[in-house]
Amino acid sequence: MSTAPSIRLEDLTVGYGDTPVVSDLNIEFPGGKLSMIVGGSGSGKSTVLKHILGLQPPMGGRILMGGHDLGGMTARQAHCMRQRTGVLFQDGALLGSLRLKDNVALPLREHTRLKEPEIMRIVQDRLEMVGLGHALELFPNELSGGMRKRAGLARALVMDPQVLFCDEPTSGLDPVLSAELDQLLLEMMCHFDMTMVVVTHDLASMRGLADFVVILGERRCLYQGTIEELEKTTDPYLRRFLDRKAEERDAPRLTMPPIDPAMMRIDCTKALGEKISIRKDERCSK
Ligand SMILES: Nc1ncnc2c1ncn2[C@@H]1O[C@H](COP(=O)(O)OP(=O)(O)OP(=O)(O)O)[C@@H](O)[C@H]1O
Image (tube, rainbow, N blue to C red):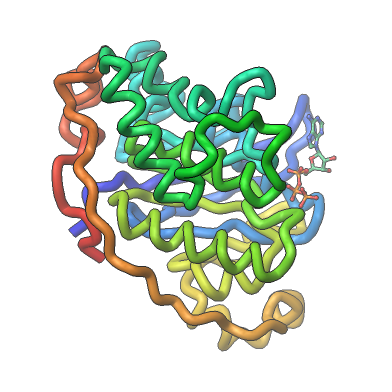
């Protein structure tokens, strides 16, 4: 049974200035599952993600993570929430002046009191998980596009997140690398008990990965539910999304201890209550 938080959008309207991009979203991304937001270019996928990440205030409605209203949080609660949230940006968002090991270590140095040897152990561990155990000393410009994405994933996972957001993780990758990254995301879902929300254009990824799908278009939510239900739809607009071969979902089971809560700078269990706390067990419970 997953302890990862659900993310609920209630009557959410998002946009810029006075112009709504997507209106009246009522969606619950289930806790411990992998959800995908898809839709045509300009349908508002990134805008919705930006709002869930708290980078923009909503025009209306609210966003709840694990039952906590993001709009009503204290600064301390918001800090804790961010600490438990990983984000994989399209290009990995690595700092060019830092070696890979230091890019991945950044959140641990910022948010924990862990000593350097322990930080390096975790960094090495995460980089090995994404297949970059050999690349600690490299700078971002010495990595391929696929490696940069995997490095960004290692950094997004270094704080043992309960929620991971990915913005177009397979963009710019060829089909083989895309499939490898999909497989890696599945492995990470298994390894970390977390809620993952992925924005994508990639229908093969959607079919291969998603437990829950949201399709945006015409300034609203056109579909929310499972892939299985989506496959049965006769809606002409939605049928356009359904023209690629499904991929096998088969994630290996991995194990690794989480970061000791005593090593966190702020006790988020106290700040956020029981609903959002550092997990101690229940790996791969799905
Ligand atoms: N910072 C901004 N200010 C004003 N309008 C914006 C801003 N960012 C995006 N938009 C507009 O919001 C709408 C939705 O854009 P958004 O990037 O969310 O779509 P998307 O579905 O992610 O598109 P794509 O798949 O092409 O990345 C577009 O009409 C875009 O022009």
